[in-house]
Length: 402
Image (cartoon, rainbow, N blue to C red; front, side, top):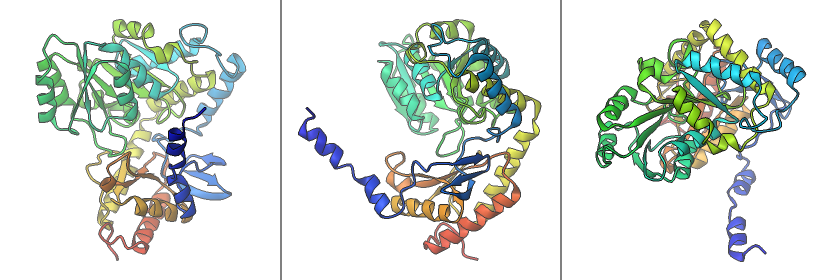
């Protein structure tokens, strides 16, 4: 029997119903058709500015063909974990290609990016170790640190003085690992990796970088954060996901052969989860090859980003410290953020609201993601709608009125 206190806790969770009653509930919007930069929702065509498909490859003919061919050859599922019967030669080929692309000796794929962080972070340091996190690290990193049974320390976001203070409290002989997002998924800024590496050497710590939003975005041919700073050899583990630039589902960790071999036999989320299906694995491999072959996609992504950032700045929107195709627009009020999102949707622009507890209540924002395949016309349409809705809602402090 469910305890009454638990039932009361469940019944008291009324926020979704309140948002629905107000007509501003923004979650679980069912997409009927996905055409990359445009989607169909409720029979309505909407410009997509909420996707993480930075390279715009989810509808690329080669990616779709690779998925279909993989189903024909391997079926719809491997029906088991990588550890036992769930490894195909596609997984091995993808791991080898990822390791070579990133610049590491070996790589290991997981079923999701979340599981990758869960597995890699939890398996390394152990009960007597210490994990040091940026306070704005992704939730999967935080959950991995909890599963590690290690002591966890957090430093203020991108604050290297605070990071050093935390490192200085840990004995040199203690196993320790700094885990940081390459690009922070809400704020859009980049970690201070050169300083982090310098401090890691000083205090004898491992460094792990989560490149979920960096693969395909930073570095030569989108190789990621470490390549962006010329520090690939100085970073011990690089983690990423297939669900963004690689237009698929899954994740990976790359590092030395010894480290990857260790994770193959100790990372529980990988050992006890079914492997990525053949279609997803083949899609990621095809997308990686396209990124390597077509550097102009990366150039277009950054061209689009620069255009959008400059235009939003001219309009007076507050975007914080973003340096990447992740563009936060700060509203700093939960209700207005939901209202802004809904009105934009009604005007044909899909964006993502981010409110507390995901961020502090006075830091609520609209998160826009730019893609290489957005056209200038689509960017201009979004800008027009953003200005119109901001003026309509009386957000003069965020946008200039022409």
